[in-house]
Amino acid sequence: MAPLISLLVGWLGARLAGLLGVVPLDNWQGSLRVGVALMFVVTGVVHFVHYRADLVAMVPPALPRPELLVTVTGVLELLGAAGLLVPATASAAGYCLAALLLVMFPANVHAARQRLTLGGRQVEPLPRRTALQVVFLAAAVASAI
Image (cartoon, rainbow, N blue to C red; front, side, top):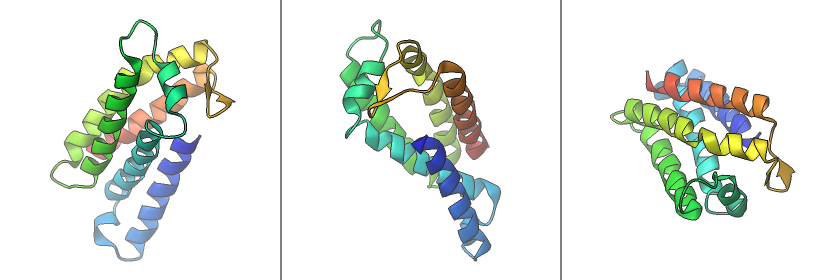
């Protein structure tokens, strides 16, 4: 739920800043990019602290070197978040983050099917997790357009 909250709070906070005169945020796309960036900072940082072991466990067993995969995806999430905030790279970063969400989705399926935990809480059931991924994917693509 933290990623969704980060996305919404970041987007609405940036939109409010835009309405208060921060020109780059005075449109839906600029403020959405901030929300998506904040969401990926939150999820990216988690790859390195607190829930790292849980994320490693989420990697499907057929994939090699789960710890390395978690590290790489965490770095990519953080780089993508930074890229969203730079006008010259924002579009490419949005599309790359959307692709990253698709590539990481099997880990979400595995976690839901195996009823794994993340931070001591069971991950959302697959239908709910899929719906959240669709929202995140739509936000990443919308931030790229």
